[in-house]
Image 1: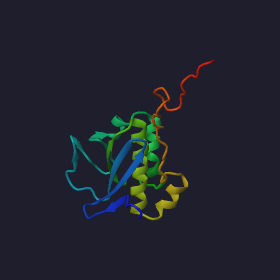
Image 2 (image 1 turned 30 degrees about the vertical axis):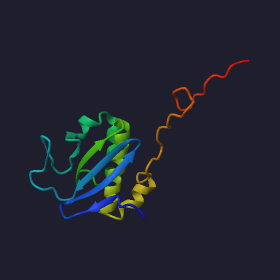
Image 3 (image 1 turned 90 degrees about the vertical axis):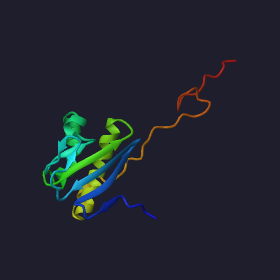
Image 4 (image 1 turned 60 degrees about the vertical axis):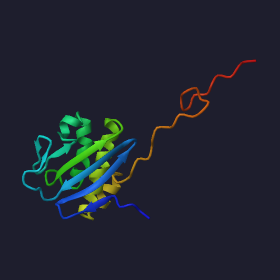
Length: 152
């Protein structure tokens, strides 16, 4: 049975989950913004993106990160049309950023079926399954290192 990754409800938002390495991002895209929607001290307006009660530019810094999290919205011509709120936890910033992008792409594809082929073509709906290799017994504390064998 396939797990449902996106949910529609009557509260005016679409919910989706994105994962990458140890990071999980729970994304809400608001199609109609309720008046006075606040996250922490931020008042959410149309076109805003908030991550963990902070503005996205404060959480994911830099132009490279900005290009990455805006890509699904730009491809579907949705930049500025919806409000996006994200709860990211676990992993590092890079994993959280990739999880956020996957969550945004999944939510957009459930808003309109025409977005799905556009996002799929760019690989934004594919979960990156690569994770850190676990530490193995007898490897001297690392995952790939072998203990040195005696010469004689």
